[in-house]
Length: 393
Length: 88
Image (tube, rainbow over all chains, first blue to last red; front, side, top):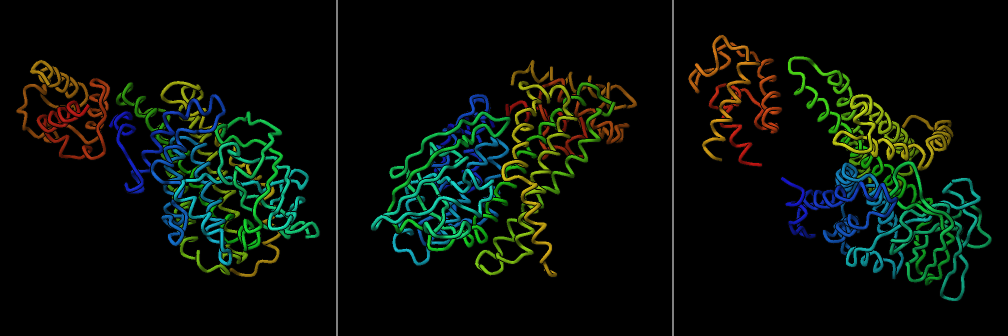
């Protein structure tokens, strides 16, 4: 089927999930090269997500969404990652954010309506969890929520807000009050109309150039009931942490699948040119395909494990589970970089090129972002502390 | 598909079989329904036949056509090629 046929078809929110994912992937794929070249937000692909209702997919059914779990979201994230890494990451980050609200609004009279708007209006949700001056530790804030009557004011110097310019809502972490400890954090849901973003830096990077993860000085003035009732440590352990790590891994796995597909096409083309002789890349490709299988299983199992225990909030705080989730991020980010290296080895100079049918250059660069976006060293240092106290499970 | 195309495709198929199938006799001398494996084509040779056809005709055999039946006779390969060329 040609790409024009798919893009020309009208796919809407009533279509099966796989069809909607394929449609968005098709749009993302058409613009992936330009998004990378110009380091710009993949506006067309995100608009396609809106068109097919994908931005509300993780909103709970009780609030008007589809209530999808991580298994289904991961399958979409992976398909999008195959087409355009940045589009996949934006989908993954958005749904991690939505998970962090939709699962934590019990006790709020107004937030459920806001969550419902994500589904109805197909709002895009970003996050500002890191802060300049705290060394990249999301579990520590300097900024704080300042009460002003029935409103709250918050000013945060954020080194990174991915797609901040294009987000409709931003989740911002901050200390509960001016007197709270650095780790006594809450999550505030700021809407773009009540928030000013003053850019403090650009986003000209090696890879993942479409996530537009610029730095901003953020100022928000919103109603006091925009504070998520559950504290940030609960949101992080029960929703944001597992969702981020599972969905990122799914995107990386999709990227790996794309590189393996390119490698296979390269080897098959070589085989057609030298019939009777096994092309040099064929045997290394066997090992690479085995590695991809391992990667796919890891993602599927991790997503299913979370979905099975999603309502057992206590279980999600278990040390063994936190360690597994941390390790998932480190393992998957290492795997995607390894797959790209090996794909480059197989495709050789054709893969090294930025153009041509066997280029893996963009994927290779994008994959380097996986280990540094939330540094693997930092995660391992945190996990090492957990291992010191872990007993059995 | 025109008659000329059909003739060309059959000629290409015969040439590829002669070059890669390791048949005991010229491919054109066999009945279209003759068993190619019985005429000497090993499964390894049939992979080379597939690669050569893909190269010569600029097509790709999808997974669902990659089975022993597709490559059992000249007629069955020819039918597969026609369906692939029609689907372009």
